[in-house]
Length: 118
Image 1 (cartoon, rainbow, N blue to C red):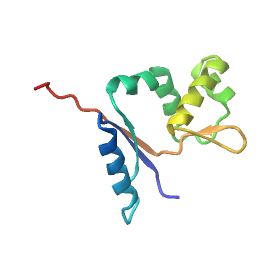
Image 2 (tube, one colour; image 1 turned 120 degrees about the horizontal axis):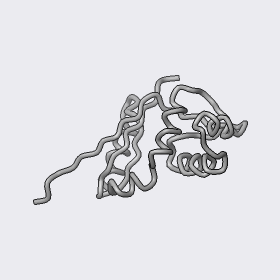
Image 3 (cartoon, helix red, strand yellow; image 1 turned 135 degrees about the vertical axis):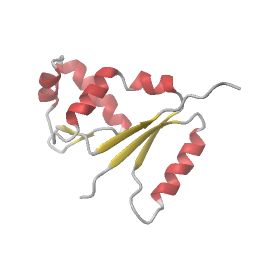
């Protein structure tokens, strides 16, 4: 299977972000996948430091149970399960048929740009 990549963007105009993702999907070759947040606040509100740590633990680790992920993170299983649910809803991780979780991406890039207000 070819390596999967994810680019996370912060684009206030979600229609523009959606059009860009549509163009990438129509390309002749794999262009990677995209996840857009309308604001940095929305991004940081959903992808907390603890959730990022879980994604990082899952990158390249293969399938892990939520209990094993919680053990490796040194966190409560219930809280990790809540974070896994959010990460799964966002598409950063996937649940397996056996109930485990896996990060399907080989590379995740965050594109955050701050510009001076005119």
